[in-house]
Structures are given as C-alpha cells and as structure tokens.
Image 1 (tube, rainbow, N blue to C red):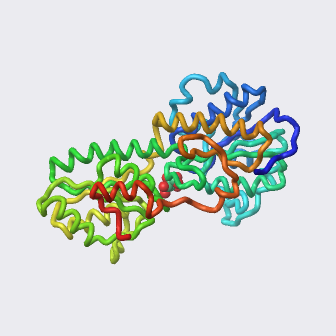
Image 2 (image 1 turned 90 degrees about the vertical axis):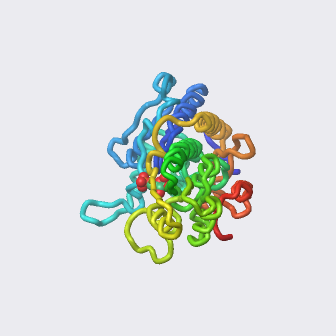
Length: 356
Ligand code: F6P
C-alpha cells in the first residue's frame, strides 16, 4: 500500500475517462458529497484528459448543490469523457503526433489540485498512472465499464445496466422468435471479454452464448439448435459478444452476429435474424445496482484519499467495497475464466458456451 506523506487535502479533482456508461454520475455525486463533507473543494475536470489540454483547463466546480437532485438517476456523465487524443502521442491536424503529457501535468498543478479521482476502465487507469508520475499528488481510481473487464474488482460501474438491457432485449426477442419460429442472434458489446454476454445471456435465457475467450464450432452450435428444437423450426436465442471471431471462411464485411445468423440459417434451414445492441447498452438511466455501486465506490475513493493512500483502485469483492493496489489493476483486461461458476451454471442449464 503506497502511503503518501502529505499535508491535509483541501482541493481535489474528479474526472471520467474512456467510454461512457450508466452510473458515472452516481460516482461523481458520491465523490462530491463525501469530499464536501470533509470540507474539501471539488473540481470536475471536463472531457477526460482533454479538458486538461485546454488553456485554461476546462473545469466544472462541483458542490453539494450541483450534484443534488436527479444526478444519481441520469445516464452519461455531466463531466463528459473521451476515448481519444492520447496525450503521449497527441494527434495534430497534419497527421503528426506530439507528447503533450507535460501540459496535462502543468494544468493539474495550475489548478492547485492536491488529489485526483479517476473514474475509468483499465486503459484509463494505465494512462493516468503514467500521467501522474512525477506530479506528486495522490490519486485513486473508480472502475467503470460495461465490459466488466477491470482486474481487481468483481464488478465495475455500468456493467449491470448493460446486463439489464441485454436481458430485456432477449425478453423482447423471445416473443418475436416464438411468433416466427426463428433463430434470433443478439450481438452485445464485449471486445475482449464476454461478461456481458454471459451474465445477460443466462439472465435472459439464451440457448447459445458465444464469448471472445472461448473457441466455438458452428457445426456444433447448429447440432445444439437441432437438438433443443427436435429439428423443427422453433424459437432459439443466441447471444454473441462483438469480439467473437467470425466463422471460419466468412470474409464478408459486417458484424460477427450477422455472420453467425447467416451461417446458422444455412446450417439448420431455420430462418435467422440478427440484432446488434451497440451503444444502447451504455446509455440511459442506471440500474439500481450501478447506482449503489457508484455511490459506495465514490464515497470509498474519498476515504482512501483521506487516509493518505495513493495509487489505489476501489473495488467490489465478496459483497463489500474495498480498495486494491493500482499495480494489480494496470496489468490488462480481465477475462471470463473457463472454470467460473457461471460457465458451469450455463452448461448445467443446457446452454452452448463453446468448445473447451
Ligand atoms: O470498452 C467498452 C466498449 O463498450 C466495448 O465493448 C466496445 O467495443 C467499445 O466500448 C466501443 O466504444 P466506442 O464506440 O466508444 O469506441
């Protein structure tokens, strides 16, 4: 645990970084309320690191009044965010890049920030760990991402809203699939990790769940479909994470979900369609668990800073909010484990989850 020798904190910054998701505002509200409760001043930094590259920096002062009311319920992030403009290789219009990291560091000093809360995924944790090197202020991360692939925490803010949306979409596709006796493929987000597909697929009663972590065999999927339908056109629900490899030999452009739907139609003779959920999974009112997680994690982040610690990430482990060393988090994304309990659950439910 990195303990910093520092004077009492009086002013902190908070920002959201990376892709948006539901529940970010709940974290911003909790950080603000907990910090203001300690007598600290809170500065919202706009658009991730991009606001710190502006001169003067783009900020939004945060008080108990600005975060009261409906902020907890609101989707997106009032601070704005970005997945673009790597400050170490900042792109110019002429196609060249330059290192603007010193500009970011200077802006943090200029604002007089004595600590920082970064709400982001594992990529943002890595970025700020590098950016804050040498600035000499403590910082703490709050994990967010619908993909739920941040190491060190069982759940990240935003994940359960995405799972809810996947489950509700499967409910709707189920009645459609029944009316038309179709295979309905639902493509969900998850570039590297299949947590959304696995959790949403089980909750929504999918017959097949394909995740980027595990190989699958389309002939085996088709055989599974024939078995559960007794080889007679019947409703079938297939969930495919966007990061799953396309079927072998499939070279056409387009989504993997569509490629799988087309191949299954050919292999089974059943009508098949694909729905791509996309950014719908990241928007709108956060699910209650994301509000709870965001509130508990935001408040914990402030306690971590108040206790003089540095380079920690708050985390959800075994039903409790805790915090872990940043060094354990910046190692890269987290994946669904072959032997995880929910993989066993899916298999016991008769769901096809791959060849492993
Ligand atoms: O990282 C979360 C995620 O939702 C991925 O699953 C997805 O590939 C990506 O964001 C898309 O982000 P954007 O369209 O904002 O680049």
